[in-house]
Image (cartoon, rainbow, N blue to C red):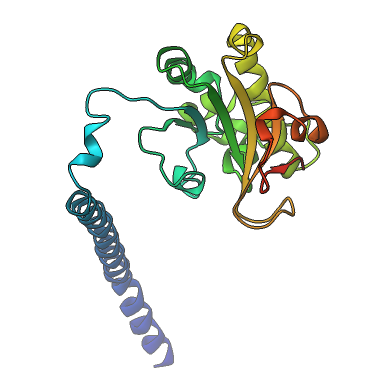
Length: 240
Protein backbone atom coordinates (compact mmCIF):
# COMPACT_ATOMS: atom_id res chain seq x y z
CA UNK A 1 0.00 0.00 0.00
CA UNK A 2 2.78 2.43 0.95
CA UNK A 3 4.67 1.51 -2.22
CA UNK A 4 1.54 2.26 -4.30
CA UNK A 5 1.08 5.66 -2.67
CA UNK A 6 4.74 6.58 -3.30
CA UNK A 7 4.36 5.52 -6.92
CA UNK A 8 1.27 7.70 -7.38
CA UNK A 9 2.96 10.70 -5.74
CA UNK A 10 6.01 10.22 -7.97
CA UNK A 11 3.85 10.13 -11.07
CA UNK A 12 2.06 13.30 -10.02
CA UNK A 13 5.32 15.19 -9.44
CA UNK A 14 7.02 13.89 -12.57
CA UNK A 15 3.96 14.57 -14.67
CA UNK A 16 3.61 18.10 -13.33
CA UNK A 17 7.25 19.06 -13.97
CA UNK A 18 6.67 20.32 -17.55
CA UNK A 19 3.79 22.43 -16.32
CA UNK A 20 6.03 23.99 -13.63
CA UNK A 21 8.73 24.78 -16.19
CA UNK A 22 6.15 26.16 -18.59
CA UNK A 23 4.74 28.42 -15.89
CA UNK A 24 8.21 29.67 -14.92
CA UNK A 25 9.06 30.33 -18.58
CA UNK A 26 5.80 32.22 -19.08
CA UNK A 27 6.53 34.40 -16.05
CA UNK A 28 10.07 35.14 -17.27
CA UNK A 29 8.80 36.01 -20.74
CA UNK A 30 6.15 38.28 -19.28
CA UNK A 31 8.73 40.00 -17.07
CA UNK A 32 11.11 40.44 -20.02
CA UNK A 33 8.33 41.88 -22.17
CA UNK A 34 7.52 44.41 -19.44
CA UNK A 35 11.19 45.38 -19.25
CA UNK A 36 11.41 45.87 -23.02
CA UNK A 37 8.20 47.88 -23.16
CA UNK A 38 9.29 49.97 -20.18
CA UNK A 39 12.68 50.76 -21.72
CA UNK A 40 11.11 51.74 -25.04
CA UNK A 41 8.48 53.86 -23.29
CA UNK A 42 11.14 55.70 -21.27
CA UNK A 43 13.15 56.48 -24.41
CA UNK A 44 10.12 57.82 -26.24
CA UNK A 45 8.66 59.75 -23.31
CA UNK A 46 11.99 61.27 -22.26
CA UNK A 47 12.68 62.38 -25.82
CA UNK A 48 9.18 63.83 -26.13
CA UNK A 49 9.74 65.79 -22.92
CA UNK A 50 13.11 67.04 -24.17
CA UNK A 51 11.62 68.16 -27.49
CA UNK A 52 8.73 69.89 -25.72
CA UNK A 53 10.88 71.73 -23.19
CA UNK A 54 13.67 72.77 -25.55
CA UNK A 55 13.03 75.89 -27.65
CA UNK A 56 13.69 75.77 -31.40
CA UNK A 57 16.45 78.35 -31.00
CA UNK A 58 18.51 75.80 -29.11
CA UNK A 59 19.05 73.73 -32.26
CA UNK A 60 19.70 76.53 -34.74
CA UNK A 61 23.42 76.95 -34.06
CA UNK A 62 24.25 73.35 -34.93
CA UNK A 63 21.59 72.28 -37.41
CA UNK A 64 24.06 72.26 -40.31
CA UNK A 65 27.45 71.82 -38.63
CA UNK A 66 29.01 70.45 -35.46
CA UNK A 67 31.79 72.25 -33.60
CA UNK A 68 32.95 70.05 -30.72
CA UNK A 69 36.00 70.92 -28.66
CA UNK A 70 36.58 67.40 -27.33
CA UNK A 71 36.85 63.93 -28.78
CA UNK A 72 36.10 61.56 -25.91
CA UNK A 73 36.82 57.85 -26.05
CA UNK A 74 34.75 56.01 -23.48
CA UNK A 75 34.04 52.44 -22.50
CA UNK A 76 30.59 51.22 -23.51
CA UNK A 77 29.76 50.53 -19.85
CA UNK A 78 26.28 51.91 -19.09
CA UNK A 79 27.49 53.34 -15.78
CA UNK A 80 29.72 55.81 -17.62
CA UNK A 81 27.91 58.63 -19.44
CA UNK A 82 28.98 61.93 -20.98
CA UNK A 83 26.70 63.75 -18.54
CA UNK A 84 29.08 62.65 -15.76
CA UNK A 85 31.66 65.09 -17.15
CA UNK A 86 29.72 67.79 -18.93
CA UNK A 87 26.64 69.90 -18.33
CA UNK A 88 26.60 70.86 -22.01
CA UNK A 89 27.92 67.95 -24.07
CA UNK A 90 25.65 68.60 -27.03
CA UNK A 91 27.74 69.85 -29.96
CA UNK A 92 30.75 70.03 -27.65
CA UNK A 93 31.85 66.42 -27.14
CA UNK A 94 32.33 64.02 -30.02
CA UNK A 95 32.03 60.56 -28.48
CA UNK A 96 33.58 57.26 -29.56
CA UNK A 97 32.60 54.25 -27.42
CA UNK A 98 33.79 50.67 -27.39
CA UNK A 99 34.75 47.83 -25.07
CA UNK A 100 37.60 49.09 -22.90
CA UNK A 101 37.82 52.68 -24.24
CA UNK A 102 40.35 51.63 -26.86
CA UNK A 103 42.06 53.50 -29.66
CA UNK A 104 42.52 50.77 -32.25
CA UNK A 105 38.95 49.42 -32.25
CA UNK A 106 37.51 52.91 -32.85
CA UNK A 107 40.40 54.52 -34.70
CA UNK A 108 38.29 55.80 -37.58
CA UNK A 109 35.89 57.65 -35.31
CA UNK A 110 38.75 59.11 -33.29
CA UNK A 111 40.59 60.29 -36.37
CA UNK A 112 37.41 61.86 -37.66
CA UNK A 113 37.01 63.78 -34.42
CA UNK A 114 40.61 64.98 -34.28
CA UNK A 115 41.41 65.43 -37.97
CA UNK A 116 38.07 66.32 -39.56
CA UNK A 117 36.23 68.04 -36.73
CA UNK A 118 39.56 69.39 -35.44
CA UNK A 119 38.85 68.90 -31.74
CA UNK A 120 41.88 70.22 -29.82
CA UNK A 121 41.32 67.80 -26.92
CA UNK A 122 41.36 64.01 -27.14
CA UNK A 123 40.59 62.22 -23.88
CA UNK A 124 40.50 58.52 -23.06
CA UNK A 125 38.24 57.74 -20.11
CA UNK A 126 38.72 54.44 -18.33
CA UNK A 127 36.65 53.60 -15.27
CA UNK A 128 36.61 51.63 -12.05
CA UNK A 129 35.27 48.07 -11.99
CA UNK A 130 35.63 47.69 -15.74
CA UNK A 131 34.31 44.41 -17.10
CA UNK A 132 36.49 44.63 -20.19
CA UNK A 133 39.60 44.88 -18.03
CA UNK A 134 38.56 41.87 -15.98
CA UNK A 135 37.79 39.86 -19.12
CA UNK A 136 41.05 40.83 -20.83
CA UNK A 137 42.98 39.57 -17.79
CA UNK A 138 41.19 36.22 -17.84
CA UNK A 139 40.83 33.26 -20.21
CA UNK A 140 39.84 34.72 -23.57
CA UNK A 141 39.14 31.28 -25.00
CA UNK A 142 35.89 31.19 -23.03
CA UNK A 143 34.61 34.41 -24.65
CA UNK A 144 32.52 34.77 -27.80
CA UNK A 145 34.67 35.39 -30.94
CA UNK A 146 33.47 38.93 -31.72
CA UNK A 147 34.03 40.07 -28.14
CA UNK A 148 37.36 38.25 -27.94
CA UNK A 149 38.51 40.09 -31.07
CA UNK A 150 38.10 43.43 -29.31
CA UNK A 151 39.66 42.23 -26.07
CA UNK A 152 42.74 40.90 -27.86
CA UNK A 153 43.84 44.49 -28.54
CA UNK A 154 44.11 45.15 -24.80
CA UNK A 155 47.40 44.44 -23.02
CA UNK A 156 46.76 44.64 -19.27
CA UNK A 157 47.83 41.31 -17.80
CA UNK A 158 51.11 42.75 -16.54
CA UNK A 159 49.29 44.97 -14.02
CA UNK A 160 49.28 43.65 -10.42
CA UNK A 161 45.53 44.18 -9.90
CA UNK A 162 42.41 45.43 -11.66
CA UNK A 163 42.72 49.04 -10.49
CA UNK A 164 46.24 49.26 -11.85
CA UNK A 165 45.11 47.45 -15.00
CA UNK A 166 42.51 50.17 -15.64
CA UNK A 167 45.29 52.75 -15.44
CA UNK A 168 47.66 50.70 -17.60
CA UNK A 169 44.98 50.39 -20.27
CA UNK A 170 44.47 54.16 -20.31
CA UNK A 171 48.20 54.72 -20.64
CA UNK A 172 48.33 52.21 -23.50
CA UNK A 173 45.57 54.01 -25.38
CA UNK A 174 47.26 57.39 -24.96
CA UNK A 175 50.49 55.89 -26.28
CA UNK A 176 48.73 54.56 -29.38
CA UNK A 177 47.06 57.90 -29.99
CA UNK A 178 50.37 59.74 -29.59
CA UNK A 179 51.85 57.63 -32.37
CA UNK A 180 48.97 58.61 -34.65
CA UNK A 181 48.75 62.30 -33.76
CA UNK A 182 52.42 62.94 -33.01
CA UNK A 183 52.73 66.05 -35.18
CA UNK A 184 49.55 67.61 -33.84
CA UNK A 185 50.71 67.09 -30.26
CA UNK A 186 54.20 68.44 -30.93
CA UNK A 187 52.75 71.54 -32.60
CA UNK A 188 50.34 71.92 -29.63
CA UNK A 189 47.28 71.63 -31.85
CA UNK A 190 46.01 68.71 -29.79
CA UNK A 191 46.28 67.70 -26.14
CA UNK A 192 45.81 64.01 -25.37
CA UNK A 193 44.58 63.18 -21.90
CA UNK A 194 44.23 59.87 -20.09
CA UNK A 195 41.73 59.71 -17.25
CA UNK A 196 39.78 57.37 -14.97
CA UNK A 197 36.17 57.87 -13.92
CA UNK A 198 35.81 56.38 -10.44
CA UNK A 199 32.21 55.71 -9.41
CA UNK A 200 33.29 53.33 -6.60
CA UNK A 201 35.93 55.45 -4.88
CA UNK A 202 38.48 52.76 -5.66
CA UNK A 203 41.21 55.39 -5.97
CA UNK A 204 40.36 57.42 -2.87
CA UNK A 205 39.21 60.75 -4.31
CA UNK A 206 35.50 60.08 -3.74
CA UNK A 207 32.66 58.63 -5.76
CA UNK A 208 32.14 60.04 -9.25
CA UNK A 209 35.49 61.76 -9.62
CA UNK A 210 37.36 62.12 -12.91
CA UNK A 211 41.06 61.53 -12.27
CA UNK A 212 43.71 62.71 -14.72
CA UNK A 213 46.59 60.22 -15.00
CA UNK A 214 48.23 61.06 -18.32
CA UNK A 215 48.88 64.21 -20.35
CA UNK A 216 50.51 63.76 -23.75
CA UNK A 217 52.37 60.72 -22.44
CA UNK A 218 53.44 62.34 -19.17
CA UNK A 219 52.46 60.17 -16.16
CA UNK A 220 54.13 62.06 -13.31
CA UNK A 221 51.29 63.66 -11.27
CA UNK A 222 53.40 66.67 -10.28
CA UNK A 223 54.40 67.46 -13.86
CA UNK A 224 50.82 67.03 -15.02
CA UNK A 225 49.53 69.32 -12.28
CA UNK A 226 52.11 71.96 -13.19
CA UNK A 227 50.98 72.01 -16.81
CA UNK A 228 49.52 75.34 -17.92
CA UNK A 229 46.45 73.43 -19.06
CA UNK A 230 45.41 73.08 -15.43
CA UNK A 231 46.15 76.63 -14.27
CA UNK A 232 43.40 77.96 -12.03
CA UNK A 233 41.56 74.65 -11.70
CA UNK A 234 40.73 74.07 -8.05
CA UNK A 235 38.98 70.73 -8.39
CA UNK A 236 41.31 68.79 -10.66
CA UNK A 237 42.31 65.35 -9.37
CA UNK A 238 45.64 64.08 -10.69
CA UNK A 239 47.36 60.73 -10.24
CA UNK A 240 46.52 57.48 -8.49
